[in-house]
Image (tube, rainbow, N blue to C red; front, side):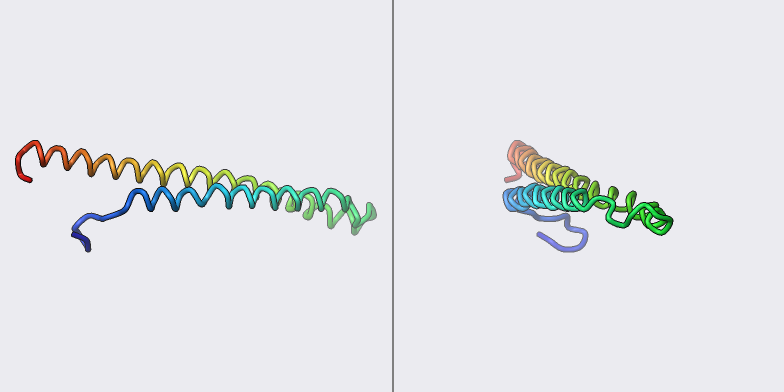
Length: 109
């Protein structure tokens, strides 16, 4: 039974399998962020140390740092999401099994 107001139906194994795809994507994002950070660091302060270079660096340097750190944050967020999705699938599956036991024990099935 599915539809509005009737609860929901899910295949816990499919949900867990889908959740398993998030961590590898997080790993790829972290790797891309690490490569970007290394490339930016290799370039150094190529804008110079004159007045215009300092003005550029004032905004660019913190923005570049925030950008490269975001890749690591996304990596962790995807891993946390995968864990939460798996836990939700486990909890839903457990609830279904518990409900099935109760129904069987009451003799209604």
